[in-house]
Image 1 (cartoon, rainbow, N blue to C red):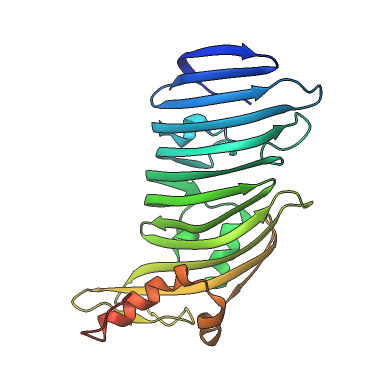
Image 2 (cartoon, rainbow, N blue to C red; image 1 turned 90 degrees about the vertical axis):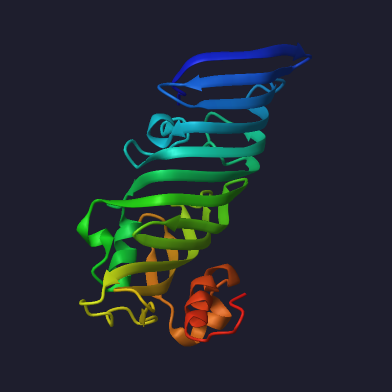
Length: 265
């Protein structure tokens, strides 16, 4: 609904029904910047055509959460992003319902509130003592993702959180359905001290050579309404056929640790 900013500058002109903005820059309050090129088609009565490209630097998620339709307090961290959108904006429809585009996002030293049902279901499905159970938010060092928008479908092939808990996601959310639906495969990996039991997760049980910490992980599939999906662990025998190749990387690396001389790629 709004973008908090200190100053905004740019060059605008009208070309028939098109409002064109070049070199548009918003200085975000209290820090960060968004630069954009904007073309708005004002020729229709019920909706506005939009052709937008942008890049943001050194802003913080918590300061722009309302503008990008995130719940207040849902996420924080310093982020950089770039991308483009094209389509139509209808005041009676959700923001991305009629837009196509792609966004590349990188966030540093942040956190995501984990009290939402999806996170809780992931925690329950892993059956372990996870950071989900100990805190009301998931802290991370980096969050990276390429997110595609296709008229209400939001998808990613490379969503990755790196921190005490490592999360890899490939999947899609369909915002056109009522309620919105998710279909995703999630890899969750965590470090635990070697004195703890490491057999609470069904898929992986390794000790890293020369380390006093254990790496434990599981792959899960989430299907159904975003607010209450069905989350199940994927059996080991289904991994080679079911799990996307991008999410197999942690297993390949672990295998390489115990098979010297082989190429993990």
